[in-house]
Image 1 (cartoon, helix red, strand yellow):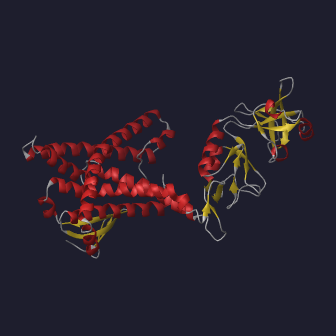
Image 2 (cartoon, helix red, strand yellow):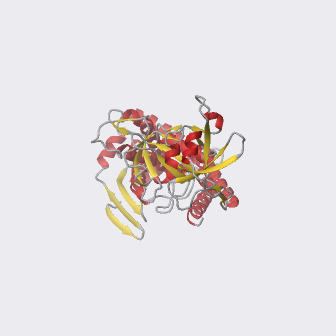
Image 3 (tube, helix red, strand yellow):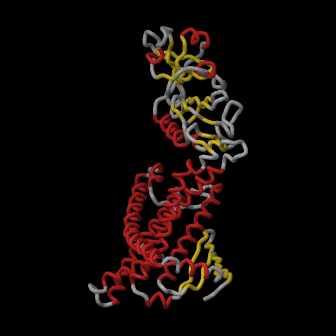
Length: 456
């Protein structure tokens, strides 16, 4: 037993007995409830051990498939991904990441400690460590007591960590789901997506662009009630053909001016000067069904126009009108962004550039003194807590050397195979082979995951 601070290469560790009394109070609180609680945790932990093998196997197959097909878009489909700060984890999110890891680790170890006291195992102390840059927690239990209790009692202790991580993840999900109701007295939702941040290099920057505090209500004819709508609308706009705008025939003739028509390298047509920042080339079909191109001042032409696909969509009130469609480069779209009471923003570019450079929130403050960032902070932290606590449960349940899964497997084999495999040495051999396979599977996932993140 050692208390205090110890430092070694890449590892800083602090252990204390200050919380022992609190742990003993928790471990002796409502014994029947704790027995039921950790028995459920034992069943979950055993199921998680088998489930983690299936999940790691599936992830490994997905990674190998992606490596062979060289399809980078498939990376987000994998349920488990290696996270490297500064590579696939933004530096701005590090506080969320490390805080969520530390809380998940502490809750994990509290589970072990309370379960151990419940099973009459001596509790020596609690500690926190930092390995390289990753924080974590641990509990110090009296090993002799652990070896003397039955395999089922051991399982309750060894499974308590992953069980508590699962419960913490579910709690995070509940908070995330109920957040609109929790914050209802202070924030309202369902009226649009509130702009909370715009990067300096964002195409949405500028005097006619978006500003922090703007409320986006529409992207083209796609209504935006929350952040999910914003993302889905941008996804739809990037996949669908460019929408057009209805323009009165007389207005079209008045606004258009003659220009030289030529084809870009990608095959699309341009009919405006390359130096123009306000004019855009539009295509339309006249009554003779011949394709026409005209250069128009974009804002004057489409600011108050309805969207359309064909001329038929514009035939209202018997006024001759045409559906003019922006002739822009492939993958590029002209999108009209409504953020009243400001003038509509006209965005020309790939829709995903808006998604990556503009941060929004579904929560709109009821009062000016309320922060627009608070709901985003709570939402983001809950998402990190859910994913990292869940990942900690999955990884610790893997039957792998030095993880909880090693002790869960050993106790499980002792509890189930002692009558089938009488010799303890043979049971230990079976356990060793399974641990070897589990360790190799986890190592392969980590190694290939790191390669996918850093080398590609």
